[in-house]
Amino acid sequence: FDLSKFSELTASGDIPTSGGMTFRLRMNHKSRGCPQPTSYDMTIRPVSTPWDEGIGMDVSAYGDDGYANWEKPTSTTFWTTPGGDFLTSPTASAHFDTGFEDIETDVTSVVNGWLSGTFPNYGVGVSMTASIESDAVYTDYYRKKFYSRQTSFYDRAPYLEVRVPDFRGDDRANVQWGRSGSLYLYNVVGGL
Image (cartoon, rainbow, N blue to C red; front, side, top):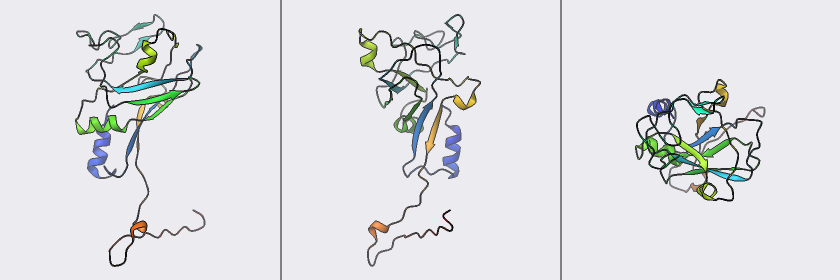
């Protein structure tokens, strides 16, 4: 994810860098005419290796156009582990009851790691949990698809949502005689 605009806003003071700010990953479900997996969890983990996004999948011939794929992050290197190289923490998760849900999950710890330079920003990987992927009984969870950033439906592309508490708090719970504090009075006129 490109965090440059966010960095500009925090540097200018338009968004405070403290006070409960959170980040949420938003990915929209892509409907298809196939059965959907139901009642399962997915894991969201930071990718630990640089990779070449390519231009996606050829849905007619079911082939990858460019890189990355299951075996390689670029045309000249292989993943350490087939399917991708990921950090073990921090992680996030999303639960799906019907299989048609979008992802909306808190990834604050991941984004804070990117912003602080604790680990590089190579994006995130979304996959079934390790217990499902290694369980031979559940070999077919069909396919869960999300819109990619190359979609022509711009309102459905994945994005990071920043949430900043927009209230002004005072010290009403800690007011003591002889000490300074803040107490705000809000006047609402006409119910607005």
